[in-house]
Length: 368
Image 1 (tube, rainbow, N blue to C red):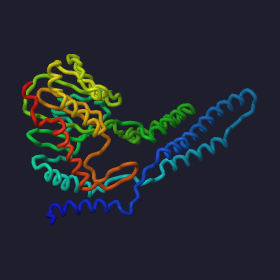
Image 2 (image 1 turned 180 degrees about the vertical axis):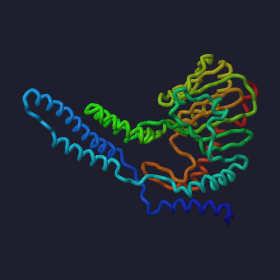
Image 3 (image 1 turned 120 degrees about the vertical axis):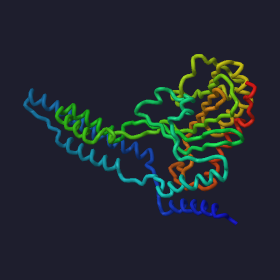
Image 4 (image 1 turned 60 degrees about the vertical axis):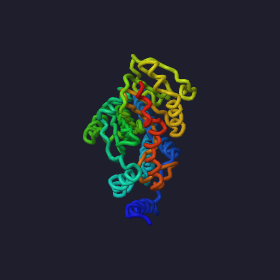
C-alpha cells in the first residue's frame, strides 16, 4: 500500500501529464525559419534597389532632363516587407512550463524525492555562482567571463555520499546577442543612413527611447554539470585533464605554465583529452588506470567531453551537457513530453554514478 508521501508524488506527476493533454506545443521548423528569413531579406534588397535607382534617376535628370522614379518598386517593396514581418512573427505556441506546477516541483516534490534516495543530501533550487569552490576550480577562460555574459546556477545537490562531501549543480552561461528585431533595425538604420541622415537621427532617437535591451536577447553559451568533491585527504599539487574539443576548449582556461604535460596509457582518453600535472609522479599515481577507465566510461555513457581538476585533496569537474536536469517537461525532436517520477529518479542517480564510477569513496589519495 502506498504511503501518503508516495501518493502525493504520484498524484503530482499525473497532474503534469494531464497538463499537456489537449494542448499542442509546436516549434517553428528550421526550414520555415530559413524561408521567412529569405522573404524578409527580399524587400530590403528591393528597397536597396530603389535607393540605387533613385540616385541614378537624379543623375539622369541632371544630364538628360529625364527622371526615372521607381515608385512601383518602392510601393511593392514596402508591401512585401510588411507581409514578411507578419509571417516572420506569426504567433506560434511556445514551450513554457506551467508556473504553478514548476514551483510545486522545485519547492516540494524534488526535495522529497532527493531525501527518499539520499537521506544525507539536500536540494537547493538556486546555486550561488560566486562561491569559493567555483572560483578555485578556475575552469573558465577570461573571455568566458565577459561583461555581457551571465552565469546561472540551479538545481544544486549538496551533502555526503559514501563518506564523500560533494556539491553537484547545473550551470548555464548566457551571452547577449542581437535579436531578429535588432538585426532588422540595424539593416534599416544602414539604409536610412544611405538615404538621409535625418531619417537615421530619428531612428536613433526611437532606439534611445526603446532602450538597447529591446534589440538583444540572451543566448545559451554553455550548459553543464559542475561537481565539487572533498575526500578529506590532503595531497599537494595539481592535475588538469581537459578536453581537446575546440568548441569547449576555447571556454576552458589554459593550464598553468608551471604544469607539465603527461600522456596516460589509454589511447581513447589521449585522443579526447590532454593532461597537465605538477609532477609526473603525482600525475601517473593519481590518474591510475582505474581512474582513466572511469573517465573513458563517463565520456561514452554521458556523451560529453569532461574537464577535470585535482587540486590539494579536492576534485572539480565540468560536464558539458545539453540536457536540462530536473524539469517537469522534456523536449526531444521538437516534441514535448511530461517527465515521470522514474525520469527524475534516474537523474538523481547521477550523484551515485559519478562518485562510484570515479571510485572516490575508496580514498586512493591517502598515500600521495
